[in-house]
Image 1 (cartoon, rainbow, N blue to C red):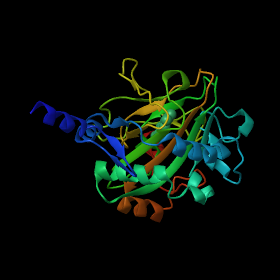
Image 2 (tube, rainbow, N blue to C red; image 1 turned 90 degrees about the vertical axis):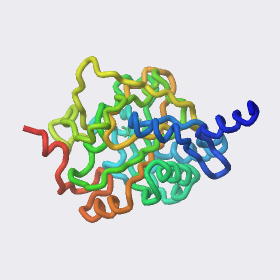
Image 3 (spheres, rainbow, N blue to C red; image 1 turned 60 degrees about the vertical axis):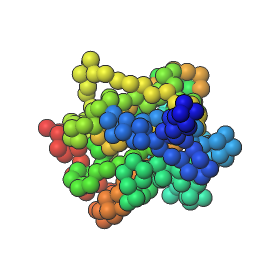
Image 4 (tube, rainbow, N blue to C red; image 1 turned 30 degrees about the horizontal axis):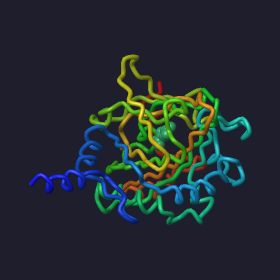
Length: 283
Ligand SMILES: O=C(O)CCC(=O)C(=O)O
């Protein structure tokens, strides 16, 4: 009896099995309760080395012609690339199609489907790199819905963030307000450090000083997954190493089709002609 109960306990741990990643019932429940989870050991070291080689072509500025899709999320669109602190490469697989179908895409897609169902498809990808010793490389607190068109009927989203480097407090790991997704309601956002969105893409929520915040440290090769309403962001990088993150977000195929129809592709080069969080809340 005793020996039979052990494998049962282990089988409820999320884990990689060959080219599958199985999310345990406990982690699925925790995701929906908190608005985020951490999943260990998603990519192997060999897989990470291959992905990081391609990733670095964006972080070093080798891939050009991206317009505003290569920007500093802690600065403005007119900053020089050499001065970027938080390098944001939007839609890297659009600019380098050889990324399409990589092992992280395959595993993260299956994770999103286990969290929300089989109609979840790739919506966008993003590389976020914080340079060492850059205290200003902070990602302002926000809800992802704040960045997206208002009024999309089916908002379900699973955003997977792969730690390409260890992600820890000192290099500005992701931080969440647990349970802040529960109201499923857009909070007031404002443009950060710029008069309007033509200068900088970054939005910010003002949180009360006593808001509980959980910093989620993740070793290289593990991921966090978060939903579209949970309030999150990250502090600057005061360490002497990079923080590199590879984000892929999944939404329902119907939502993706709707948003492409109105011209929204997650590119910072999109011409915005839909209602945004700023239209709702700015005086
Ligand atoms: O990882 C971070 O520092 C923030 C990323 C983020 O805000 C997001 O993926 O929605």
